[in-house]
Length: 128
Ligand code: MN
Image 1 (cartoon, rainbow, N blue to C red):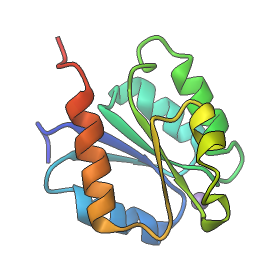
Image 2: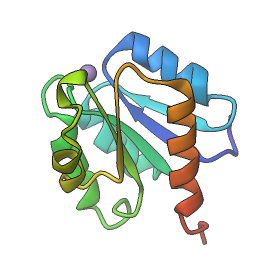
Image 3: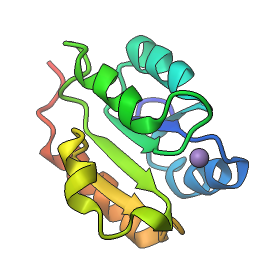
Image 4: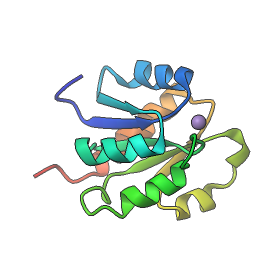
């Protein structure tokens, strides 16, 4: 909902978009982008409080997009959660070294998502 913390969801899969929105829409203001390029553009326009970043996207992937976002002075402190496929489970080190604050694997667990998002937002300094 407007007025709540802003979350940008970068995800190309319709079902996952629906799932994220269903879980988060009550407590957050949501923005959705379906490609990395769109996600970067939205991030620069919206300056979200948190970003959920799918790793496997058409064209540019989520790791490259996150590097660009982290290279932007206005966005570098925005926490980015990597959303990975099962193939990357156990690859936490690799994902975290790419600049993500946290990662979660699909299929998404509702309580895990809620708790990771709430924790990362609580660590953010208040907007001045
Ligand atoms: Mn994907």
